Amino acid sequence: MILLIILLVLLAAFTAVFLLRIVQIRSGGTAAVVRILPAPQSEGWRHGIIRYRDESLDFYRLSRLLPGPSVRLDRQAAEIESRRRPDGGELDLMDFGVTIVGVRENGEHYEFGFERGALTAFLAWIESRPPRRARRRKRWNS
Image (tube, rainbow, N blue to C red; front, side, top):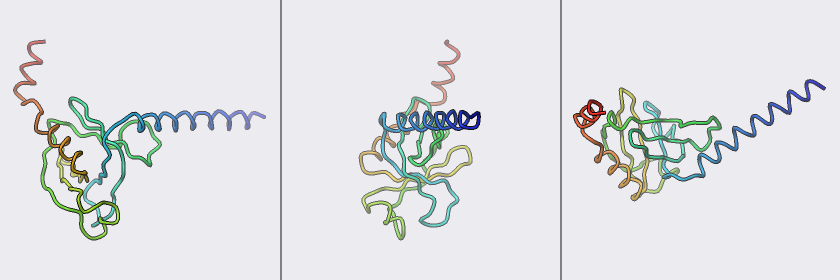
């Protein structure tokens, strides 16, 4: 009897975590595919949703059940390294019109696959970040 109660409690907890994750994903964002480098050619891509915040980009992987983002990029530290079109096996996952953007952030390397509108949003988010001096000044004035 106690074992059955423990199993029911665990099932309820798993269901709650699963529902929370579904709500997080379904509450909006921009579709993208991401992979953490280094990765073998055409492998490691994960589908998910991106949410832009003032100081970070949060990527929620669709197949991950744990709450919270799978990848978080710091806006001030993120630097665009490269752009390219998908090739080889990547074309099985993405259309040829997708642009793959290489990003470096605090020693980590990522690749993001964006459709045209999502790429525009990402570039605008990166390019419109406030300069570091403006952030320092703001802290001192508070």
